[in-house]
Length: 326
Image 1: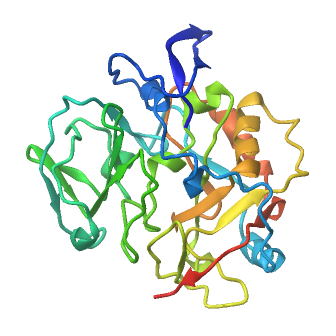
Image 2: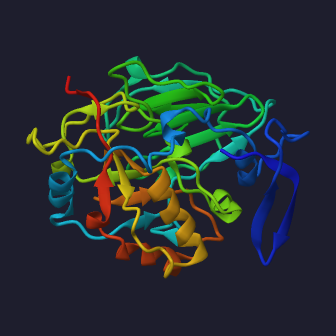
């Protein structure tokens, strides 16, 4: 991600920070969401941060896009401001500092999903029990903490508070200073074995004028195959068995270079330009072409919904390497 100077100005309710020389870090830790943008989120060489605008188009792209477009609507911003069914809209995260106490993490399954403790990083994690839970505990229930002092990322899936700690189906820890991956075949807090936070659309980075990473998106089960492509490390039980149109976890799509973004708002142009340069990456089963971001009171929901005018046919598939199917 980008490095920012410590001094930020708040104008008209929109936080913006001026860029500074790389290597500068805050002198004191702040628990604000904006402070997550002051640290580098994985090295620039990490695949999630790689410019794929000039990468080869996959030879099967046209057929894959036709398959994905069938029965699918436009892009849906699965994040925003306010509440939906009593919960914030998107996948929330909390920023923690070096002195944040670590708490016990218990891995076990429940009626929603199984126990993936054997594919998880053991606790304790520095996640406060007051951290927000995605959907207030409904469905995937992701819980994320970004340690900006130690530059580490802690993520839980299907999580809920258990005493003075957390219970979850899965958990993963990432060193944000290294180009690291899950072991082959391992899940994470995401089905694809990818980190969640680095692929979220976040308000403060959009306000800075640039998203410089791939964006997380989902497809319905019938549109996913049982396989994964690096940097993903875990497959899902998708029902697409047609090898001529592979759709593995980790598949990267990019918005076509000639797609006209000029009619969109400044906010949406930042998002769409990132889709051209870094693409969207398949990370989980869900509603087709839902792109994921973090909730923030400053999002304009009506404006974000205009992204629905961007259709699957406006994308192309980036050339895929080896697909792991077992």
